[in-house]
Length: 205
Figure 1 (cartoon, rainbow, N blue to C red):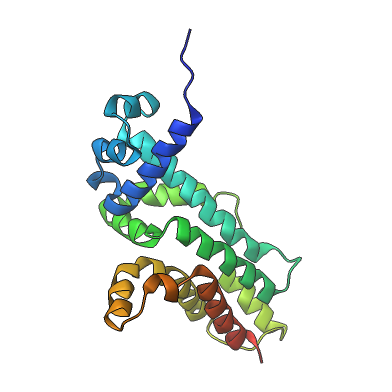
Figure 2: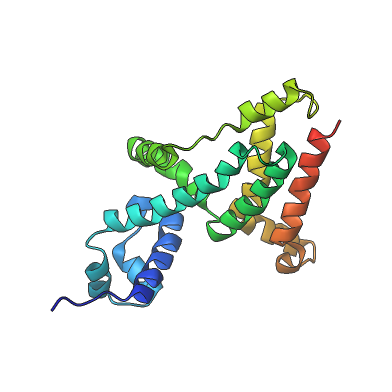
C-alpha cells in the first residue's frame, strides 16, 4: 500500500524552502539547507520533492500566483481607482510581509537564469489583465483624477511598498543607531497608511 504524504510536513518543507530560496536563489540554495531549516532529514525531504528544481517550481510559482492575484484589483471597475489602489496597498504589503525578499530574489534570478524566470512570470500572468498605467491614464482623460506621470507613479508606488522589507536590515541598523527600536517603529499598518497618503496626495485635485 502506498504511503500517504503528510500535508503538515509538506507545508513545513515549503515554508523552509521559501525562506532558503529567497535568501540564496535557485543555484545558491542546497537541499540540505532546506532540510535543516525545516528540521527534517534529507531523505524525508527527497521523499516529498525529488529534486531542488521541483521544489523551486512549487515555491516560486505559488509566490508569483499570489502576486498577480494582488495585481488583478486594478482591473476591477466595480471600485473607483483610489479604492482599487488602497486595496492593492493592503494586499501587496501583506504579500511582502510574507515574501520580504521577493523583489531582490527576482532581480538575482533574472541575472542568473533570465529565460526561466521570464517564462514563469509569463505563465503566472496568463489570462490576467494587469494594466495599471493604462487605467490611470484613462482616469486622467475623463478628469476623475489630476494629471501626473503614470509610469513614475507606478515606480514610486511599488518602491514604497517593497523597499521597507527589502532594506529592513539597513533600516534596523539605522533606527537602532538613533536610539529607536525597529520593531516598535515599523509596522505594516503604518506602512499602508503612509503609502495611502502618497496616493491621496497624487490623485486628488
